Image (cartoon, rainbow, N blue to C red; front, side, top):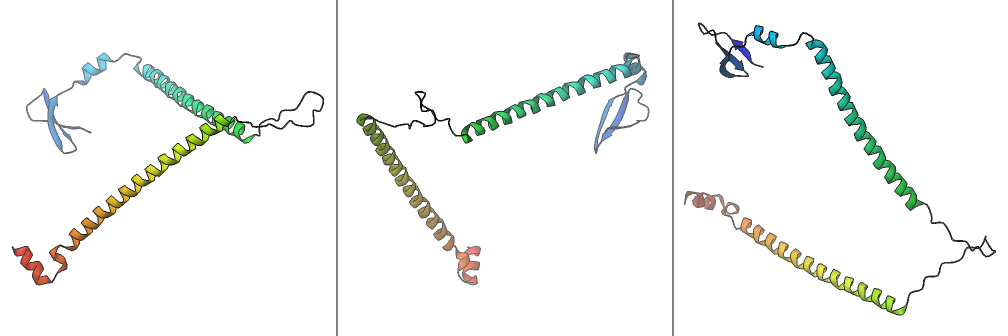
Length: 167
């Protein structure tokens, strides 16, 4: 907070000190500031405060409402996943016996799925080979760094260390 320090002999300027920072600024006259404020400024300030408070509360309410809707959507999707699918019943007379769903694929569809599976397996093998290669590279780099640290003269005798530091 700026604290004005009154200078000697200069009526238009005041010296201010703000947390160790000293500067000079024009003196503000309170009579000019009071004249520019409306007479009902207290009522205006209260009204503006209520409007800002209402706007903030509406924003918070909307944010919470969106969050509640997201949680409801997640809950509904979880319930849909957890509930078993309704079983189809035959309407031809035996309503208590559920018709078993048979899953038939044609031979070309099976061949296509097998081919896709083999392709994915080949991709996984290539990725595994690349990971092994990267792992070997990292181990070699680590060994080089370790060896360079072990080759430093500080691991020798103290006299050898002093000689290397003096050179």
